[in-house]
Image (cartoon, rainbow, N blue to C red; front, side, top):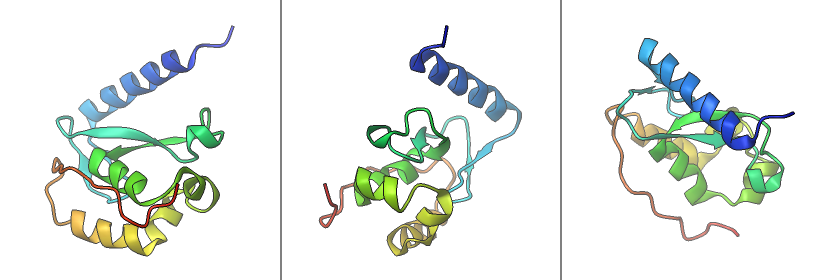
Length: 119
């Protein structure tokens, strides 16, 4: 019998928490450490709505994760931005990363959707 998606998510979260206690995680988008007290979440490289439920995820600062979803539609993420290198190469994300790198590792602020964001 296959474990449920929620059990898999809980196991991944527990493993990440244990690893973070040993050594801080590094956000692959901004390359800053993710301290245990920082807001963070897992980003599906291919959105779940586009078939990415059982594909790869990465742990990001919440502000980095929110910046991605504020700028791009699920379709864009699935077709042209389904890996960290593609995201980093996008000019909007590159500008965001340059800005957020100047902030402390646990920094968080609300993120607004961009006006031009597609559906």
